[in-house]
Length: 205
Picture 1 (cartoon, one colour):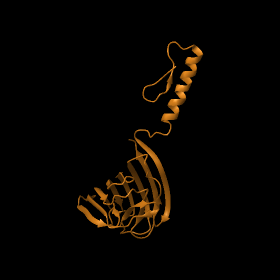
Picture 2: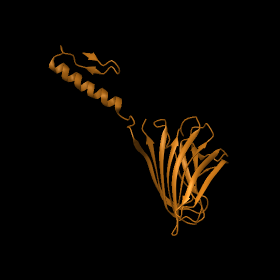
Picture 3: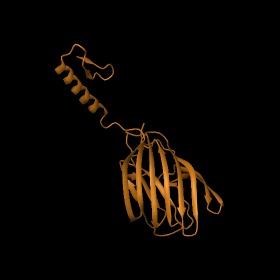
Picture 4: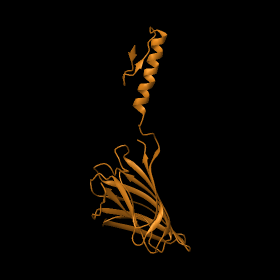
């Protein structure tokens, strides 16, 4: 009987009896299964999907773990209770959204008419990802880099806001200047309530 050089998995040798070789192959299969079970696959892995209705905030705790360094967040908001709002975001330390003045974000925006508007802010108490021009629905794609690590969290995003008369999109980036490891995320409208779906995926290493 022999073992593999890296994981010491049992393997048969050419002098084994057939029954011993069969047992070694069985043990090898068991060892491989035990080693690879639970390992993150490449690509995206869905961590959580939350559907919410007429709430003032949606929060997902414990969605950032040591399994993944980077995350994709998809937020779809088909309904808001009031217009002239923005969709805001904070990272969550344990169960408490962090509201220190350490958020910054920068984005280039364009209206469907071709008019442009840039967004730039630093030392804010939350991220802003959408337009505030009487939108009735919004959608957001957000990439978060290293939120669970004790290092600066960086972000890139694309958003679309729409009313019955116009649509507006942003493409931008941002960051949170703390070195805290965050476990969760919260989204909320600047006023009123909203309805939608929030999905969080981990990027495979």
